[in-house]
Image (cartoon, rainbow, N blue to C red):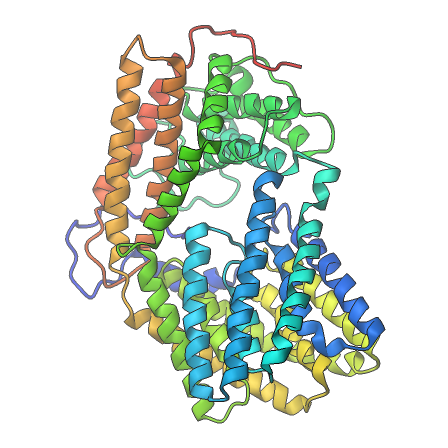
Length: 605
């Protein structure tokens, strides 16, 4: 999602060409500013090192380091799925391995059949566009499509014969199978680890939202300087008990993510039951109007979050109103999702995201044109490795033009600094083959350790790792590698962003309008169940979760559209009104959660 909020009070009709509020996000300082590292940065970092070390050391022992490029394609699959519960992670990483092998197969077959640079660049650009759309549609990021594009583009320009392809693909699949085991290995130690982290984030977001309603705890809700663009778009002297849309939207997204994680986690266990009860409390604190008290007090929520994130037992909260009905409804919803009709509905939703009216298609066209232009321009200038330009261009394309501009700055700065790091470390890597392997493993860990701070910082480690991979096939002149990489970076970034500005995404506003309609329908359904005394508690819970999901989608669509230009006028006032009405409806559901204020919890320990 974009970090650029929708500003209120602008005219509903704007002239084209349109430079929306996203222009404020084009400042280089905001794009390059470092943030706090992810709370799970070490998981992909350690996973990729372990998944790479075993194949690397095996090939080192047999004297075939030239094959590392094929095992790396499988090892890099260990970067995916770390935010998913293990039941879903198993399927997701398996799909990543198969998708990686499929893209590599296309590249290897193409490379073995033709030596035409023009054809290879065209196939590389087409693969990049397809990989971008599929990763966005399945929401398999991070790291998204960039790893797929890096592997398939590099393979296009590697010498290849048809008879070698089965063996090379077998290496990729073997390394991918090991990466799959590495990604799932933590389940043996902490089976509910992903669910615990998701619930802890929900509790922390709910604590911030609850603290924002309490003037005595205002500093906890606003730890940094207040951003007026993110403030509640009402009168200057608004209700002090209103936490504002920024906190409400963050809490809604975190609670929704926690429920989705628990729904996808498999059969209920005592730990998951406790986690579900904690999410009920987080949701109650998020939707409840008025000052936060009791279990909804910010300090209580923060304490539960710390215990949930830790390695000790999950806290067992007191029963919240309607907890039994809530958990019963979650069980019913989980059963529906796992049934055949639920799986069919999920497939239909995926096909809709890939359909002719999908807002992802303009981004795919940007990727295709930008990667092709970057590759052909570098080839025309005589650069020996145009796939670097293709990967640079492919890495720029984010949800909107503002994020793409930020990524352009980050990628360019990171690559240029990374080239300097490569120049410094190259003599060390050439001491011996084990030194080269150790350097690659180190930079693989460093890249994942730093990239959550900012993409450019991670690119400083990614660039030398990508350059060192070429050393496995034999030493190359350092000046040639450095010069080609600098030229490819500059040309790829320039042509890639040029394509992003020329290929408009006017479907972004259409996605907002569709999300507005869906939110209106979800709000109407929730209001009907709240007003109906005979409505089943499980139905009230289902409609409330549907409304929360629609508000999350609406905010994501609004942020994406706010970062685009050359589009239709954004219905900002309707978007803000829909969010306010939706959150008011959620608050109205709080007192009607269940028939008993102290209903016993299902599966209580």
